[in-house]
Amino acid sequence: MTEHTPPLRFPAGFVWGTATAAYQIEGAAAEDGRTPSIWDTFSRTPGRVRNGDTGDVATDHYHRYPADIALMAELGLPAYRFSLAWPRIQPGGSGPANKAGLDFYDRLVDELLAHGIDPVATLYHWDLPQDLETPAGGGSAAGGGWTARSTAHRFAEYAALAAARLGDRITTWTTLNEPWCSAFLGYGSGVHAPGRTDPAAALTAHHHLLLAHGLAVGALRAELPSTARVSLTLNLAAVRPLTDRPADREAARRIDGLANRIFLDPVFHGRYPADVLADTAAVTDWSFVRDGDLTEISRPLDALGLNYYSPTVVAADDPAEPHPHPDGASGHPREPSPWPADHGIRFVPAEGERTAMGWPVDADGLYELLTRLRDELPGLPLLVTENGAAYDDYSDPTGAVHDPERIAYLHAHLTAVHRAIAAGAPVRGYFLWSLLDNFEWAYGYGKRFGIVHVDFASQRRTPKDSARWYAEVVRTGTLPPGPPTVA
Ligand code: FCB
Image (cartoon, rainbow, N blue to C red; front, side, top):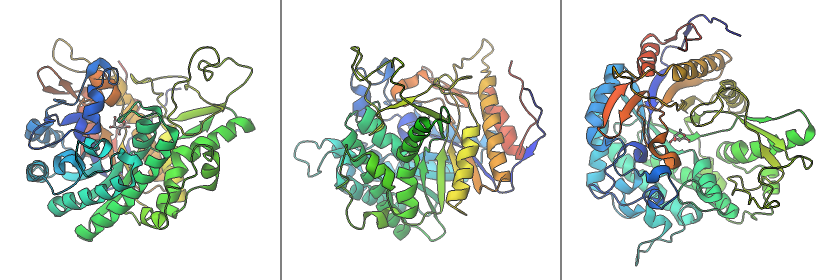
């Protein structure tokens, strides 16, 4: 059904921006004292990243940041969410700060502020110093990455170093980006660095990431002025049962536990959900949780960041139906799952329109999550810290990049944000993923999420139609009537 909606005005003071992450855009992997991260190692391991792509050069933002910031200013984007590279600021993940690494972020932040752009920093967007995963010979680090409890303490030390240097100018800090991905894709399915496939390790990593978050909140509060805002960004899942059958609803409960409540309960209520502990009992006894951890993990936050792309539909396995990967039963080994205890659960590809990632386009999931958070965390300010879509963009013979599907995706999702605000969800801002086409993790440079096209051979930047469209939304604080025409 085609429905024409009236223009939608966002509240005064709503924060508009774009988002990026260090390893995806910076390049300069070995410059100014930066040491390798687990993503440098992973991307150099044959077969891990499509086309053998690495972040060695990426969008060369490390050198081109003045031009990128000028472009943001030209587009009139008032805020910018970026991440700090731990292995730049604290090479190897322990010891003193690297002045040259901090100098880069110092210049970046000053340049943003000189253009009137508010810097919003994430401390960890997946680039763990490699030495914390596998210590270089003779090092004193424990190794084991996020499966090692000591990594959480190292993270808090790094947070303090970053805040001591940049805390006078960065007012909004986020500890972790999407710890679900770090733990469950990094140590469960192995499609992200460090590429391990061990469900018990994934749950151990999960807990240590949350502990790292809590310890870092403490370290940040100790360094930052009392006006600073400290937050966490989660990729919560809009989980839906395929049907209303009890078995499908039970599958949805289990995945809601492992995607959502395994974060929200410890961070905001200081406890792990009893059903999740029971569901995972065959994987781990959770003995890595020590007295006092949950108090640390549940330190009060000033905001919660939500990243949303598409919903998750689940069903109970139907034993009568052939399963494409039936645990090796017909010679197809089941792919390692990111979920530590998902036996008997099937993930159902949603019907309908998809992005170039194959992800379904469904803005209702964003509305559902924002209104759920409104109900479960009353009064806590919410930020959409990532939302956007990949499409197969190309520049036409005139040099223009037309991306009507992305505009339609953004229109639908911003409509959902507006609807959630109208329903009382305290959503204070929206950060579009992403400013630039960039290194899309295991997909390499093949997937383009930017509103600015990057020609990776020449590093030429070209704002896509969506950049101009978004600039107008931001300028007016108003979403134009929709749906926009898709050519
Ligand atoms: C999120 C990541 C971000 C980007 C988008 C597409 O999970 O946080 O870095 O890869 O997905």
